[in-house]
Image 1: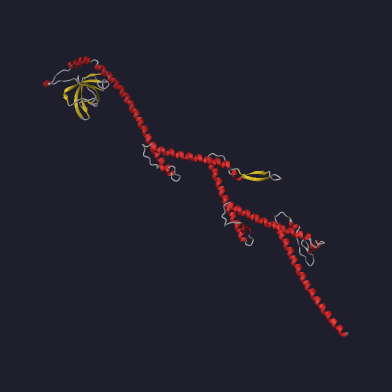
Image 2 (image 1 turned 135 degrees about the vertical axis):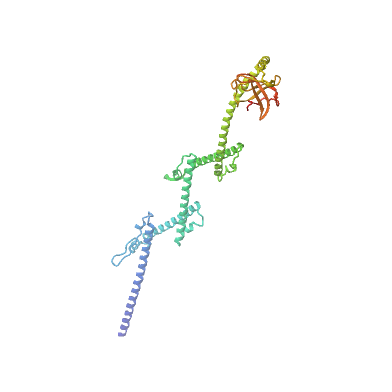
Length: 429
């Protein structure tokens, strides 16, 4: 009996040791489970806080957890107490599951939003002309490589910035061109979109419509087209003007006028040509003035000729009277001097007097000179007739009228036939 009691005591001691060992192991396992649960709950809570930032869901107020300490118990909707309180007869812990479901739905919504934004951004990049190898939805969705999706985002932003710079430059150029073609436009026309209401929605929602710059661009395009047509007409007119003014030696190359690359050179050359044309015109004006002066002189000469012709007609109409007068004048001539030479009474006349023969009468052997009493005193006077520098004949003035004189041709002193226009000079010349 004593032996049995000893054996039982030993067994009880062994069982107690075993129970203590199991209790220690269970305590450690419980602490591990509790630590894991705390970490999971804290991680879920932190994930909700991270996803809740600027998301306007406010789920962090419904999903939270604070681990316990030796002094304070754990708290929060993900804590053990909340789990215990959520126990229902079916042991589904539905309320606790719903709390976790909120976090799951928020994560799913965030992933969906992320994927939608990635697809939208990628499509926007393609629509804006960014090469497909620089931006695609897969790179933007890939969270395994931060550099990959950040690089894709930077490429897209860089492309958008370049497009904005280009658009600003284009808008500035269009506004400047509009000013040139007299179209009223400003930059705000290209930067403002119209607002429209979507009447198909249950509640009319105002959205942005298209840019209303089409009419302005049409006006600018039309203005530029007209300006281009006008420039082409100018070029054509200038080119044709060079062809029509063919009496001037143009240095301008007609082929350079319509060419935008060379028309500047052509314009410079044309300005020089215009100066040449202007000089020619100035010379022409001077020539016209001289011609007008000569015309005035010619008209005066024609008047003188008419007077001379009148005098000639009167002279020819009264030849007998001239003959009588001639005989009378001849009778006044006295002959004297040794050898029977004839001596004439000659009055003083200017030594540099010079005139012309205006009419020749071979039948009566007299000529008419283009000067009269306005230049010489009453006769008789003797003059020499010359053609160029050659002597032709000698004449003696028998009658001096107001504008003309009648002279006899001395046959003994003659070296040729007298013509109208021959020079009349004094013997001293």
